[in-house]
Length: 128
Image (cartoon, rainbow, N blue to C red; front, side, top):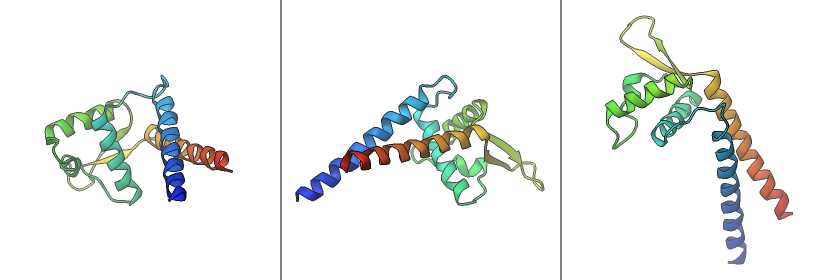
């Protein structure tokens, strides 16, 4: 029982350290402010990109349950404006646009990965 509580405590501490590190990244002037809907979309996009799945604007508009397609479209435009996504036209059908990552988004996700590594390493060191 005590071991399980210690494991939960370590996991909670790791997560809280991660959140603090992420907050520090987001507060940097070089990173554009993204609202919670934009963040959720960006995370969903990243998962699709990681799996190598092409992601269309139409598909993105239906990705968030409970959020209207017009709201998703506005947030997508915001992410594009902030340099976190780009839209590429399909080579055969100009009506189809794909959402693709940008170097800014790639750098952001790399920083998040470093935050996770740092939070995990700090917790592991403090436990030893």
